[in-house]
Figure 1: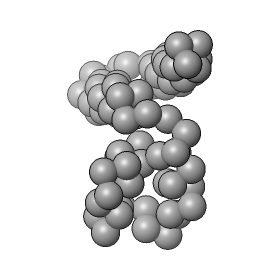
Figure 2: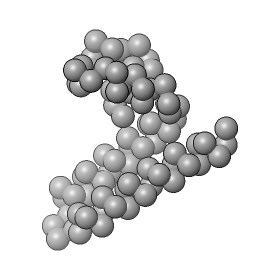
Figure 3: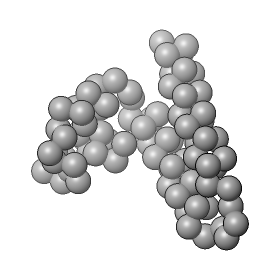
Figure 4: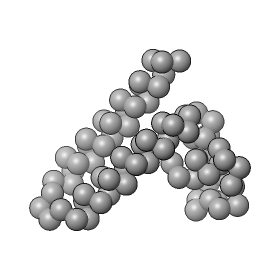
Length: 80
């Protein structure tokens, strides 16, 4: 998501996954910056929770985040 946002802003020279430019370009073309940014923030929060909360059910947390991604994408397409 970070690389897709960089791609959308013309910062291709700063891609972390420079070996996967076709995938990054496809993500950048498919989803608007607002969705990518919102999802990036949610994934960062998920990552922090996995690292900082001892005893957290990681499988449940990741499943929840994947469902959030699906819902965000569905909401974006519904509004088009």
